[in-house]
Length: 320
Image (cartoon, rainbow, N blue to C red; front, side):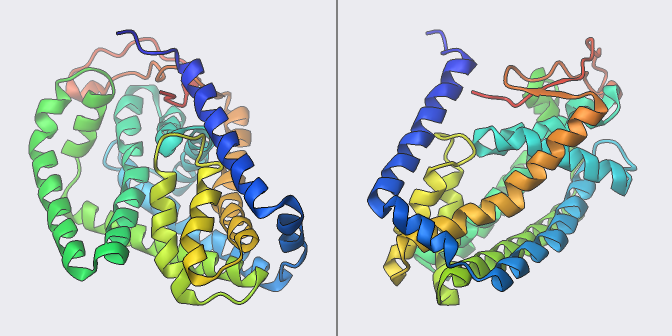
């Protein structure tokens, strides 16, 4: 059976996003949401915004660790530019798979492997969120089982790297990238991912508190579930689904729906949309065109014996 066109899939996800957004606005009431925005505490909002800077520095550091497994060495400037461009691609894709756009800032002969490494960036965040969500739902025993499963999965992945490396396309790129990872790099990436999540949590609590008093426990127990829901690839960049998940999870702690919607959207705006817009500007200055479509015809890794196809500077966001 022929798969639907990527453009059709994108429009379906856009309609699902609008449906979620419309349902949550109608349920909450537009006037209630507007009033929540008007009553925001500018000081707490400023603190949350300021924390976005060190969070971004840690994200660049993690991406630098990953990218250096593909094309060492990677300068801080290159890591920063490529992360911004990757974020621009991730903004319009479900599950942030458009993060692979970061590869187009690198030299042509290494883009395929870098794109595989770039997919590990959102995967690292997803693993942390899944672990914390399991802890919230099932307690420390289930979390220990998840940690054991992750360790086993990485061990198997490292062993399968050679087999995947012989495949064409994205699987081959991911195989090469996985094969170049070691336990030291994985532990460092894991530690930086936990630190990034810590910034997310503090920012989320500040944003909730900016609209009204909210216990820290409410933010701590709700945020993993919200992030896990957003990872479902049924909307564009989690729009609508994020706000709906926020309302549902925070309702257990008596948080007003308008407060939940405002805080979750503001977190997205500070940590994701704003860097994505900066990345779109960086891509424009570098002559990289961000568009929806099939994966970029990035060259293979010459070190792995691949024959590089013709390179382009256009970027796809891996829709579908």
